Image 1: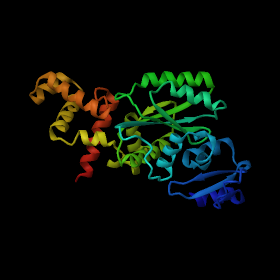
Image 2: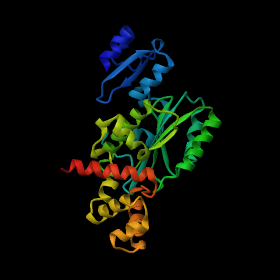
Image 3: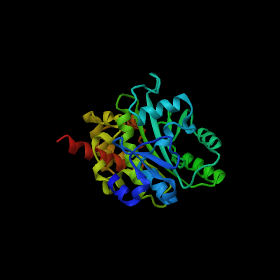
Image 4: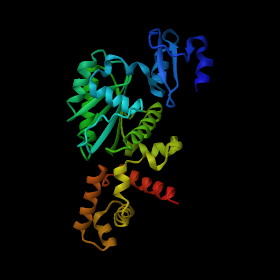
Length: 299
């Protein structure tokens, strides 16, 4: 990729990193290589594409992430820092990823407006048009409609279109960084082909992952909470029968030879543990595909 960029931009391109050179946009690849391109050599479309494909280095040191907790999260997620940015009492977390069609002039008020839609968010701006919301007190079942209302308000107030991607409910443990990496790469890839849909949950987008980015399709991309919840034979059999019965609780209960309330209890337990409302078609589709993926990798 860097060789292609060098051929395209020639003398405007360099891999000799100089953070004091403000005449260039600086980026970092997934494997840590840094490069810069003269600002005058880039169109707005090329800038937005580069910021989607690579991590802008400006976010490491500028005022966009000027609080201690923001910097700790940034270092943990992008700089391989060993310092844990979350408290030991934090059990679950969800990441939101957003891309703007143009930079926000009033970034302070924009962040405050976002914060109003969450209980305890940490907002990282990775560039002028790209950021991450870390929800440290996530809803178990994500309310997409309420989030869409927040996005519409932001669009109206700040005159900018927002593309948002909502991650899985994650367990806070030593695998969190790896889970974030999988999601982040997936959503960046998805955004490059974004159509008219402005908001996608991970579960809605998963089929697109299978078709467009099969290289990302492996067990590691799945939330640990989901993987742990279907380890038991009883639970996975219950889920499979429920899916085979087209999400019909009464029919599934009959096939399982259990009371309808017993099946409802198991489903509620699954929803509570994973944050996946399997009663919706999109989420049920995800669960079905994820179970197939896990079954394939176990053989």
